Amino acid sequence: MHTFGLIFLAALLLTVILRLWLAARHSTHVAANRGAVPAQFSSVITLDAHQRAADYTCAKTRFAMLSVVIEAAIALGFTFGGGLQALHELTAGWFEPGMLRSLALLAGFALVTTVIDIPFSLYRTFVIEEKFGFNKITPKLFWIDLLKGLLLGAALGLPLAATVLWLMEGMGNLWWLYAWLTWMAFNIVMLAVYPTWIAPLFNKFSPLTDAAMKERVERLLDRCGFKVKGLMVMDGSRRSSHGNAYFTGFGKTKRIVFFDTLLSRLEPQEVEAVLAHELGHFKLKHVVKRIAWIFAASLGFLWLLGVVLHAPWFYAGLGVETPSTAMAMLLFSIVIPVFTFLFQPFSAMYSRKHEFEADAFAAQYTPASDLIAALVKLYKDNASTLTPDPLHSAFYDSHPPATLRIARLQQAAAGAH
Image (cartoon, rainbow, N blue to C red; front, side, top):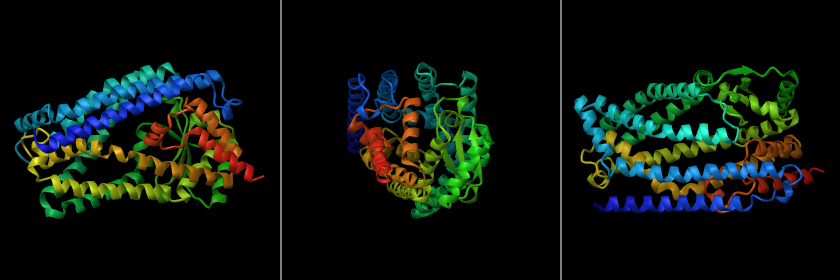
């Protein structure tokens, strides 16, 4: 086996072992703390709710462990197992060398991975989410969503892929820079059109009609000096009983979207506090910073793809006999997550820092006690564990653990009096 193949195998094995170990730690830690509600939550979270959250977390974590093994098997099957080579030979029998063959290879890979994922999505939705009372989606709607996603992916992804392939093959050694500019432009356009054209394909959005709630939100926006195009309610209850609120779009297309499940469960002042937290992300430039990091990382990855694009060892080391631009893209998409996993804690830490800052922002414009009350309800209603394993949390969690987050807000509340 080629040296790079051995390096990839070693990295894959290390990643799988680490991910399984972290998941096992998490499941064991949550189960060990199942018997008692953490002291600071004992007055607001019942033991039954705490144990339901623990069981839900353990069920998801066990399923995640299976997914880790399956993902590794898929990566090996496509590379050393000859899967990508077989896809190449299949598409080569249908198309002459050129753009159509390259796009067929990319589309074939996407279709195969989608089909492989379907049983896992079905189990996640209709077994785990169903068991714990979160699933509201019907089998019919599940398949409609899947079909819409495939058609949308083809309509948007194939032209983008064709453009990038054309740049890779026709723009010389700096193709990666032009591809990056294209990728940035595509994402910015998607941010602008998503609220109006894409999101409504999957959910129904209607204006917020609760006059008192609308007035409360508008007063908060005025205090924060923030303008949006609309206040919308999304029918999230069609698919899940989980609740949320988010901003979408940018510039003049910014909208605030409330899940109907969130509005039905929180008191008006709690909804206002959650919204103040989301406003904090915008006012503190978290969204811009995250987009900038994503664009910077994508530039680095495209440059790296340019380095390996014409390297025989890259293809031979991963069991591929027929180098091509499309093949390089697919191999790169399989390899990169394996080598970047160890950097995940840094991304999670950066995200948690932003969450603390957004909480602090919210506490300046709404009572911290309102955000605490909202978070406790959301933790309870979403069956989020209050006792995650600290190391697992450090690797994966984009939000701080409940105990730390509530403690900081309680300090802010105490300081306000």
